[in-house]
Image 1 (cartoon, helix red, strand yellow):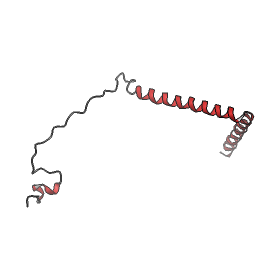
Image 2 (cartoon, rainbow, N blue to C red):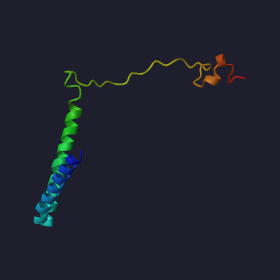
Image 3 (cartoon, rainbow, N blue to C red):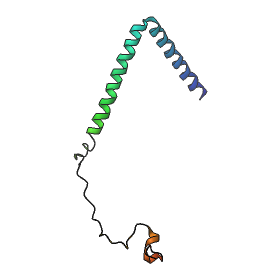
Length: 98
């Protein structure tokens, strides 16, 4: 395990040194341009992947996502003896009409 960790640290240090040498050679203006270019490229790629995955939901099963209006639930009549609060129901021994 120690050997793998040592090898990973060597690779990480090599990549870090290489990147520092490459970035140290360019001017700050070019460095800013590279950073902005990478930001817009990866940002656009991220938005594309998100939108395309949302668009393709259910496409694999050959069934598109069905969107329909919410139907109204059947409501009971305006019976005052029926209450949401279980303590106000007569079958529980208490009522608001006392």
